[in-house]
Image 1 (tube, rainbow, N blue to C red):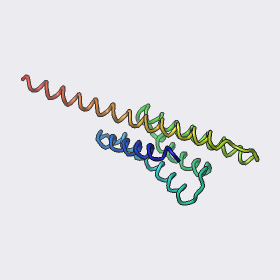
Image 2: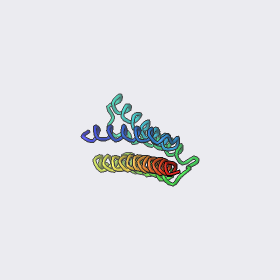
Image 3: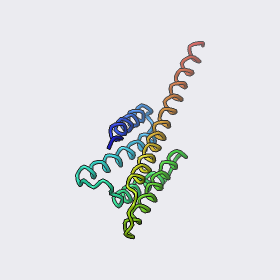
Image 4: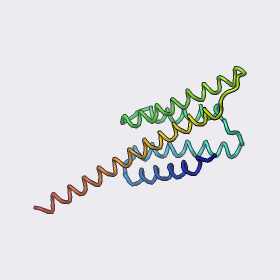
Length: 148
């Protein structure tokens, strides 16, 4: 798994950026993203099963359900929708297996990885934007009082 190390760095950066925002919603979304990735990776490491599509269905339904239960922002709703897309991809992959077909593991894995990167970039971009706004607000606020 060549994309394991970059993804670990991406998850760590997302969590660090979310912690810097001091925003509970961004931190909750980043934590869900990190928890799903950690549970998924631990399951694969413990079982040696590299295409646990059936495990992914349950895990992604739980994560998507948490995010979509009361989405406070469009970004949170988008993140929940990405988990729904992962569930649909896992169901399609599993459906091919269950009907006796030979699914394309590489295509499924690549699609799942792309959706994972979309999730990381969404949370990271959200946190970066929030931090930039916070920084600019603080700077502008400071300068407005200095001239009194």
